[in-house]
Length: 172
Image (cartoon, rainbow, N blue to C red; front, top):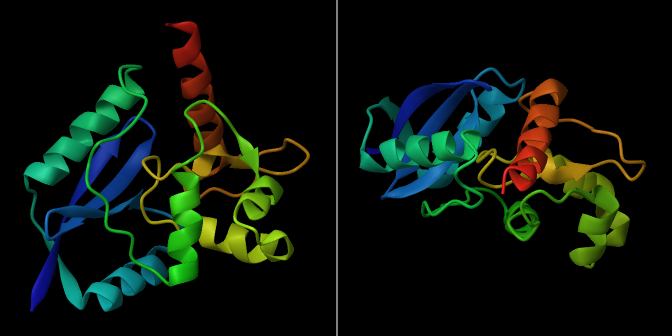
């Protein structure tokens, strides 16, 4: 049996479950999110592996990079990623990686950039299934009217992350 090594990280924004497989980050997600079981099952099935509570150097590095981000010292992440999902989901998550730090974009713009303007709901659903929060920045996607919409960590956390990124520009 293969294993996904996992650890719980209690950040100032909430608890995250961080997981690695074959020295790549496959999980950095809000521990108390509503879709926790569905996300975990997708990752375990996709990797044909089970979770084991065990820290490692990549988990430690991920936590360090997250803390640097929270402390206004990091705008991008360098940990190797392993996106686990359908090809469609992976394309949506990869598009999230192209949203610049401190910038928001609407689901509609994301759909246009992917050349799938008629698939806004499916794209929003894929964003909601993102299992690498913050690092794959789904918090940067907002409604077309500028309002904050769904986020696995909660709208209050989404607002705080966006404010953190705006504040970091001011601190430069």
